[in-house]
Figure 1: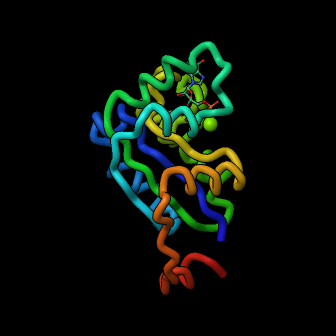
Figure 2: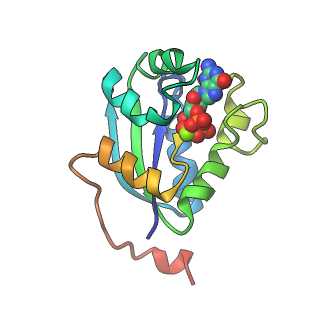
Figure 3: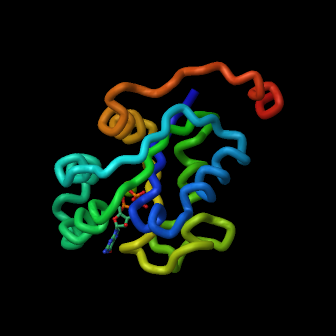
Length: 148
Ligand code: GTP
Ligand code: MG
C-alpha cells in the first residue's frame, strides 16, 4: 500500500495542533505506520527541501523549520500521497479551502503548519531520510471496514 510522509512543522507543534492533524488522518481511515517528535538538524532540513535550495526563501524556510521540534509521521493507505496533500490544502493558506488543515488554521505561506510528500517517489525518499529505523508494517483488521 502507498505511504506518505506527513510532518507537523514547528508552528503546528507550538500551537498544539499535533492531535488535530493526527485526528484528521486517523478518522479519514489512513493507517499510522511511524511517529516521532524530534528537533531536526539544519543538514537534515536542507536534505528534506533540497529541491528548493535555489529559491530566495530557502534560508528563511530552513530557519523556520529549525525553530522548534517537529512531529513526523508515516501514513499508509490508498492514494494517501495525493489525498493527504488535499487534506493539508494548498501551499499558500490564502488559497487553501476551508475544511483543509491549512485552510482552517493558518494564514501565511511561511508558517503553513504541515508538510506532505508531493509524489510516491518523494514519499519513499523522505521516509528513508526521517525514519532511518523504518516504519511499522502491520496488518490492520479494521481495513475490511474501510476498503471493499
Ligand atoms: P511542503 O509540504 O512543506 O513541502 O509544502 P508544499 O509542497 O505545499 O510547497 P513547496 O514544497 O513548494 O514549499 C515548501 C515550503 O516552503 C512551503 O510549505 C512553505 O512553508 C515554504 N514556501 C513556499 N513558498 C514560499 C514563499 O514564497 N515564501 C516563503 N517564505 N515560504 C515559502
Ligand atoms: Mg513540498
